[in-house]
Length: 497
Image 1 (cartoon, helix red, strand yellow):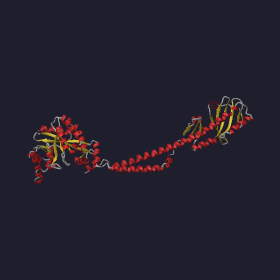
Image 2 (cartoon, rainbow, N blue to C red):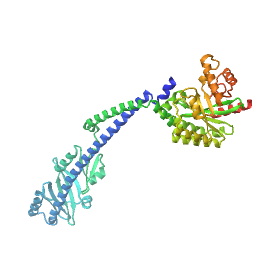
Image 3 (cartoon, rainbow, N blue to C red):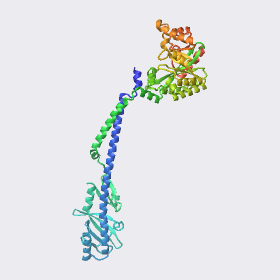
Image 4 (cartoon, helix red, strand yellow):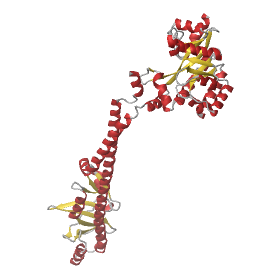
């Protein structure tokens, strides 16, 4: 019972729970990461949009300063007269973002729209050679940015009102900062930098994404994903329970190629040799233990998968042909009418026979009678082809299941195999022994040899041998073994006889 449960239990409860938990976590993590990635990209795009708008706005201030510098060019070489001051102040007045305009000629005093005459000053290297050189000035808490423009005659400094730059920075974030390009290159401040494509300045703000804000913003979607993930986990647990079914178990072991052959010798007392080997199917479960064929053979027949199991078995038998060759043996293969009727498995059976004959091995097909059997015209043609290919036919478990006298007339078998239940009737007396005697009588009058399987005691062997049986199979001689052990048995048996 324990072996049966282990055979059918592909996934244990713990494995099913693990699969459900993994499915839930994978979906939840994938969903949350997707949502956070989406909202993160959305937030990043929003931040980029804000930076672009702020940059465009600050660029417009630079553009206005550049326009003012061009308007002041006609007054660069002249003296700082009242008329010049009036014209400069008029230029500042019509440009609302400009605080003042200052002219610094190479020789002589300068002129400022705000302060009037300026003392003579030497132009610094940076001011004279870097276009749009910008410095920040602060007077009595008032911030402005002085942008320098170089011409052939003088240096023009245009003061941009710092409040307008501050408003642009606040639009981005509370911690945003404005850096002229030369200061940014020198200081390399940390944060998210947005460099203007038009003028030499950089806007810098915090580069961190607020995960808490993202989670709060997307909490409804995350709760929905959590619900879907839990549902998927529950469905995984339920669906994996459906795996533990006989049909799936057979498919699983087929996929794992867990079905393999063992061989049980058939002893010929007439020829004093091993006449043949019956190929028996075995299966190793997940723990590597052997599973009884009484468990999986009926399941395979009921689910229509016996053909697939048999083909996998024969494929592994082919690998033992070289070891079994030149021993004058036949190989007995258990088949059902379903295998013969199916074109695919029938072709594989013919190929198996042809391959075996190349190694000097005959093939005997044993027709199992656990299912109803009717020799239709099409089935008769298939058996005719099998015989033409050199196969012999035996009725397996004769007298049990659906086998009867009509199966002898339909199949005209080369052998009758009597089940171990019948051989156990020897010396039982009464009705049971009479049943066995009747089977032996049928063999005698039809001249069809009997193969007695399930021989376990010398008394059974002697009883049947006295009644004309000369082909025996059972634990008394050899248990089902792999090819190497059965070859050793054949060699020892031949040496003894």
